[in-house]
Image (cartoon, helix red, strand yellow):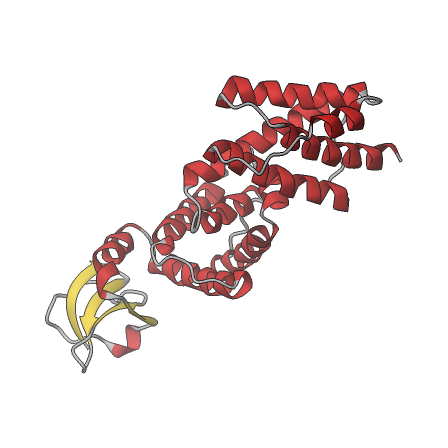
Length: 277
């Protein structure tokens, strides 16, 4: 292997016998070396084959962070694709590597970055959250650094953003969090999180929030009579749904249809009945 470019003391770009451009890592592999010299095989730890379209980004990344973080990110991506059953965008490695490098640095400096949407991410995106939990185990095994639980949510968001824009993901989480706060304020309690009814409620809220943010409508028929009948003996439930409706109207300039109010009231009633019983 011939060195083509020095990235840092521990990583170089080289060409192999087939003339392919590769990235080689190893302790001191680039130290006091020059382009055009033969690579010391004893110093090689790992060899990376980089796709042509990602070379510039990868090389820039290696200059900023340890190449080991790229290795870790690759392991997490392979795991995620297997567990989620879908191919992730090739570009996810850049944001993931950057996040892992910064997260481990924060942990070493005892800087805690709280994740305000941790509970919502775990409940709304359980598959991505489960993968992120395994990702933390991979990071700990490879670096010896155990990241805080909040990082599980951040890594899960990277996976979610692979097929959903970041601003949309955060907007959905924020709206769901506000609706939960309205429900808990209306009933003067903290919603129980360990029930099937709560899981169904959270799933409904995720798609409800998506429809609100995307200004989508569901097929509407006359739900008014059913809604009025369902809430006529439960003033607290009706007040809670009215508060949610008012919040949506004030912050998203959307009027909630009767069908949406009915579905919300059914889920809220189920969750609160579970709490009472």
